[in-house]
Every structure is written in C-alpha cells, then in structure tokens.
Image (cartoon, rainbow, N blue to C red; front, side, top):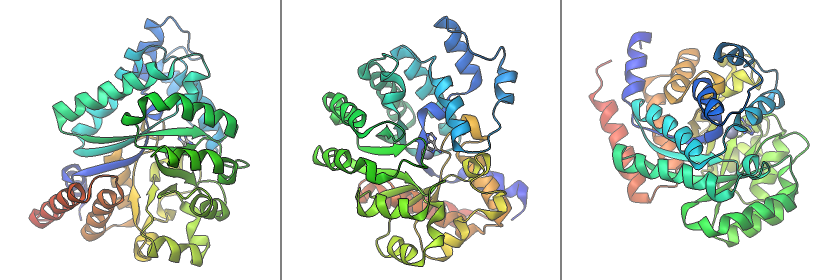
Length: 341
Ligand code: ADE
Ligand code: ZN
C-alpha cells in the first residue's frame, strides 16, 4: 500500500482504544491553561520547553514527568476538560469504543477527592456517548510503586462509584513491583465485581506476565511485549485467547524497543496471539490511535489483512457484549471489503 493511501485507510477504520491513561492524554497546551486558571506554577515556562523535556530513557523518567503534569488537576472541571479533549481528538480519528484508565492515587494522594476525579471523567464519557456515539468502559488503576494497603484504600473509595467502574488495572513502575505484591487486593476487587487487567512485561520479565495471569487472574495483559521470550506462555496466550494491548509509540519512546522495526506485534499476530494496538499516553509519546497504527504499519509493512486483523482483535479483546463485538467486527470487515487499494 502507498504511504499516502495508508493514512487514509487507517483514518477510516472503526477503531477501539483499550489502553489509554487519561492522565497521559494531557496535552501541554491544556496543561498550561489549567495550571493558569488554578494559579499553579509549572516547572517549565512555556509549552515548547515542556515539550523539550519529553525525551525518555526508560519508563521511570516518563513517569516522573507524567505525575508532575497531573498535579495541576484540581477541580472536577479539570478532569472533565482533560477527558473531553481526549474524546474529541479520538472521535476525529474514528475511534468508536474506548476503555480508559485513570490513576486515582495520583490525585487522592494530593488531597483531591475520589469523587472529584471520577465525576469529571464520567461526565465527559457520558457526553461523548450521547454526542459521538462512543461507547466506553472505565478502569481504575492501582499504582504498583505504592503498597497493597494503599490499593485497598483506593478500592474502598471506589465502592460508592462501583456502577461507573468496569475494572481495575495495575500500572506505574514495573521493575521491583511484581504482580504478586497485589494478589489480595485483586482478589477483593474481583469479589466486588471488577474485571481485572495488569501492565506486565513492558520493562519487566516474562515472570511478571505469568504472575499477572496465574496469581492475579487478569483477563488481559497491558503491553506483554516480553511474552515472545517464552514459548509456553505464547501457547497459553493463544489457547486462552488472552489479549495483549500493545502500544508501539510508547515502546519506542520509553526504549522498550530501539526501533519501530523491532516491534513484536507482527510476530505475535503470526503466532495467533490476540494482539491489539493502542496509544498508552498519547500526549507524551507522539501520537494517538491513527499515528500508532500508521507508524507500526509503515515500519513493519503491514498488509491490509493484518491491519484488519488488528482492528478486529481490538473489538474482540474489548469488554463490549458479544453482540456489540459482533456489530463492530462486521463494520471493520465491511470497511475493508469496500477499499480499493
Ligand atoms: N502509567 C502511564 N503509562 C504507563 C506505562 N506505559 N507503564 C506503566 N505505567 C504507566
Ligand atoms: Zn499503560
């Protein structure tokens, strides 16, 4: 496919985003606007100087700046504006279903109420459902650099809003914070009806993916890049159709891989793994859904069929109802059938 066709083709694909941290969609322009109205001084004096700081050697360097940016979010309106800006952006990219992570502890540890955070996010998601027909799920993530006791407190705070939250996740600094640290709180979360996912095998070893599956009982792995190191794991992922939500631009930005050409997604598809493509923290890593699809397709020479497979996989991996999945998958197939490239 010509590169000029590729952009147009990707734009038209109905897409599902399953791995997106709402705090990671905080564009510098909006960050400055909200910082100004909350009278908070950022460490950077302009959008340009902030953007210059967005070069990372590893996950931790990114997280340090990501948590700093989130500190300007104080009021419900701030969380609403953040979420609404993301939804407007992806609506223009023909994203029709989103499953959004938020990190309550990043805010509650600064004295912001759990209710303030979730009310803002929820209202924007509902508005996008009404105005854009975007369906959504909401996932509360525990910060793994904090204790399991702290995660339990977050679980407790979430319970009055349980009807708005579909699942829990595990994110932040992976190395040294294995899934096994959170066994009890994941079990308790499941008992409250939450679905379970966890970041694993992004920087961490393949053992962390096994732990997320065998000890936490997650239904999906976020990233999971390292799974190809272990043939038995590949077999398990394939047999149980356990999805991997991959984030190619994130992987390059955080040096999980050196070049996009090294991205494992194609090998995963070839092995029959339910691999999917998402944006992680698009404001920091240089692109939203379309850009992740485009850069991956360009670097790996993905065919039309492989692009279609990725798009269908995302709906299959989603938490939509069987009918909802079927409807979107049919639309993806129809779209590719009508293409003349
Ligand atoms: N929080 C936001 N983005 C993350 C990532 N890529 N890995 C772990 N935690 C995160
Ligand atoms: Zn992530």
